[in-house]
Image (cartoon, rainbow, N blue to C red):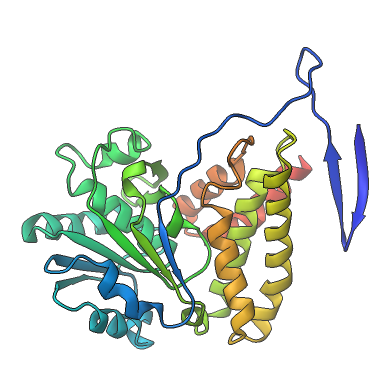
Length: 319
């Protein structure tokens, strides 16, 4: 049975699914556990001293110069008291395995105790790989080739999020790009869950328009990949998904028009985190075909991840 229910500007399709024995499909069994501590709101960076281990060697991992230009790195370093701080910059969008291995060598040589990712999803994904690879004795690419299956331990790390998009700040997944072989693959492991993540919406005020738009699209498609599969009467997950989709649809244009609108930035940031922290996928079927295809396009042609999703998903839905 299919019911078409008008809702705002779009149509909500409600379907009752049956298996081959004509039995109604029910919600799948699941275990949900997410240990990541979230520090959300204004001036949360000041709390880093209480979250980062004291008297330890800490390496800050970041991407380009924006965290320096806008004073974020300075704020982070000033908040880290009684710690020996190292820095590793230059992590690319779609983090390169080759670059991350340079960080791994520093971690091993200097015997780093704790990692702190300061940036968006690419920096956080890269930090997850560094954390796992630093303690892995064999070829580190096996971490990615095994989709994380060989990971048995990792260095602890935290995050300071500067771009709302991937949800990596509250999950156990990372996507790594190996330039020499044009591979872009993901891995997951419970050992690469952040200890904490700092989410200050004001840090996204200075993002370029394209990055803001990409972040909204990425989060939106994350929700869709867990929502438009087939129904299993998981009403809580479905309605959470619908709420996130509505929020992103409403607040995305607001943030583009007024980049310093705190409410818009805060709602987008929290929606992107909630979109991929495991709550939506608990007990429901998921897809990820758009992501798998999009990752290959990025690896081959260097197109922004979110833009590949915007290209691929509509084409898949129409096919």
